Image (tube, rainbow, N blue to C red; front, side):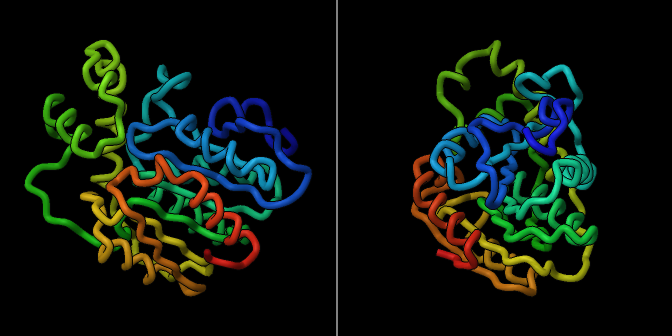
Length: 255
């Protein structure tokens, strides 16, 4: 794990496949309630063309004993510090849903430090400057209502949603993640000098195509919008397609 200390790798950055000696690094940020392992399939698909690291947030899997970080910008600060410690390498950021916000805030921090990413992929998330009226935030709903929302998003296995013991383990962290997203306050600033590639499912209830398109206002260096058939977890069955788009971004293309 060249450039990454054992402590950092054990806590924040997971590598599922050997890293090539050179080439770009892809850093993947999970959705609310998600873990680094969500990106195992994408890592396998991209290996050995690039190094793939997946972020493991506190409060899940082997970090379950740690309290979740309920602030997007604070979470981004931790990850940005770890990436700087990992050493120089051309870096692409990829975040899905909540992970898109974290990846965006990490990109802002890296750019301010002079470590400008090659590209930023934002998936399944409306632009940070957009707002939706809501009667009651998700993190304030009772457990039964949150489970209903998970069923509607179709990204959690039915067996998990029907296992009370498993739900008891994952719902507190999921609620904390929702709190982080729903209390996130976008701080206006200059657009990134990073190409932004936005991926969205055509029927995603969390991000309409129009809301996703507003990401174009957050970059001064090129914007691409890709719309896929499917809902919020459209990417679950599209590792090959998404890997092709990521490879293209590493060589200056967008598709």
